[in-house]
Length: 206
Image (cartoon, rainbow, N blue to C red; front, side):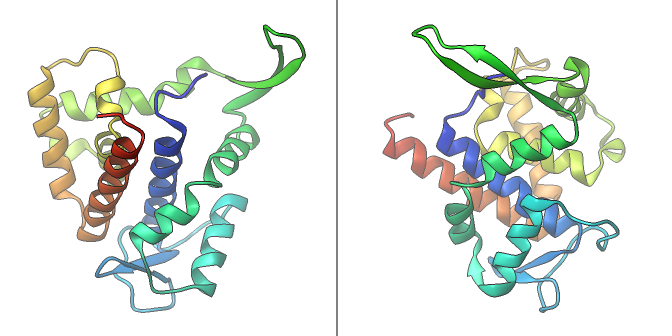
């Protein structure tokens, strides 16, 4: 499995996704664009935490608890360099990805990661297609709406297979879903989109 995003953009996208996950489970809050621990007066969305975390999210919660009050954009910048490995470890632990040894064409071996179940691996993409292609807005969960927003904010929308309906309508439907999100999540996506745009400009990608 090879990422469709530049490594820096992938790191930003995963950072945004993890911050959103922690907001939706009530483990962190966001107030006026600043990230706060859950025991502060941050504006939270979604349910309260009802399950234990995992190493990657536990590390983020600990860092936020020891350095509260930093902006979303600062956290995106700080987390983007380390989250990819942590998310990969999580997916391996959940048996979504499986490590396999592969040979490099110039010699030597390397580790690759393949989907344990192709249908399971494609499920998030299928949920995005279903949400954007559906007129039944009441059937879309907060998690799926956020996944759509992350797809849009990272520029992944243009790297997915041919859309039905057309690209302009897809863009509008994604914008509608983003607009309907709770304010902390919608604001997070705006900060993420700005960070992605800055990376694309700095690397000469437009």
